[in-house]
Image 1 (cartoon, helix red, strand yellow):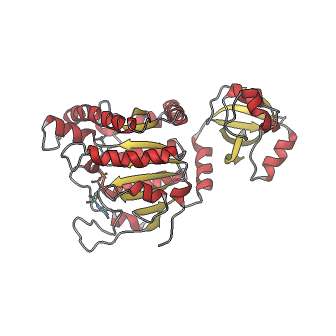
Image 2 (cartoon, helix red, strand yellow):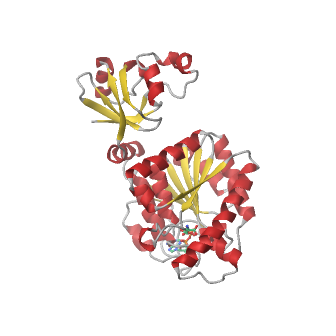
Image 3 (tube, protein in one colour):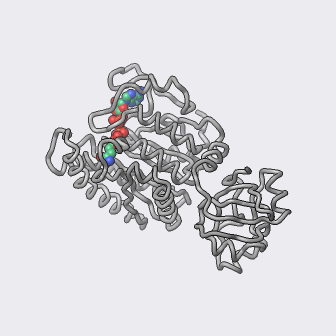
Length: 374
Ligand SMILES: Nc1ncnc2c1ncn2[C@@H]1O[C@H](COP(=O)(O)OP(=O)(O)O)[C@@H](O)[C@H]1O
Ligand SMILES: N[C@@H](CCC(=O)OP(=O)(O)O)C(=O)O
């Protein structure tokens, strides 16, 4: 069987886990299963991979804690169940990660948070800061405050939006089936699993039309849609059975389990296009003529030595505009240093960064993979 390279090379991943899996088909939080996923994610983290978890299950866990056997119809009852269940969810994630000395953080998001530019950038900065600190963020929808119209409604979409938000390399969706089948395997025992496709492949829609399980929200339809959303920022998606033994570690080893859905363009091309259209610039780097020439020829990173001056207040990871000495914009990109640090190292060679700042995170001011020439 051929090995897949995508997971092996990934440096930043979103792992989304559905309700049925997390709550043992509604019987209450499956602490043992959750512990096994945590062991595998901890391994990724110690390998230097940044991981954000999108955890469903608050409603299902709340129902189980409140002794409800039927999912309520009323929004306020669903919200009450979610508020009760979310406690159990985050406590369990925290306790399991504590065994590996890894901190977790709770992030509850609404659709509004991600469609409002300022809040979007705030959420992005917070998640990036947490990842920088080695924390594993546990994300869910903020069920208490959302109303019907603005609900993501399913965490597959939320997972994809988080993948866009943090520019993840990939989204892993753990679910209760082995992967995406050519028809719903619950109703069609002869259904065959799809190994690999482009996320944009229109044949996927008919395959995924079968609806959700009793506890999940979206079924495969929302997973396919999520893969398309994630592909916009260049991320691949794997839909895989969360009950498969060591599923996450085996994916990391390049094993072909589950269904891999790939972005249309190369990851870097898609990601650059997405960066150009989605992020506002927070500051400006004025480049000397040498750096302008190098960037215009393409394919090269911007080093601190080519930066003459820095304006604006920005944080590492934010978008800055790169201009020539007449003020003409040459490129845009995600900067590797905060504004004050960028000012301190501007005009200096990269081997002096440690001497000036006391540490070095990157040799480049802006890496070529994170830069769009305009
Ligand atoms: N083509 C398909 N391949 C696999 N599962 C499918 C397909 N079509 C529909 N399904 C249903 O989707 C369910 C998984 O989605 P969902 O219940 O939303 O789970 P989750 O909680 O993991 O998001 C499966 O249990 C299955 O019944
Ligand atoms: N915020 C809700 C999300 C529900 C949901 O999307 O479930 P699923 O389809 O199983 O991922 C919860 O935690 O119950």
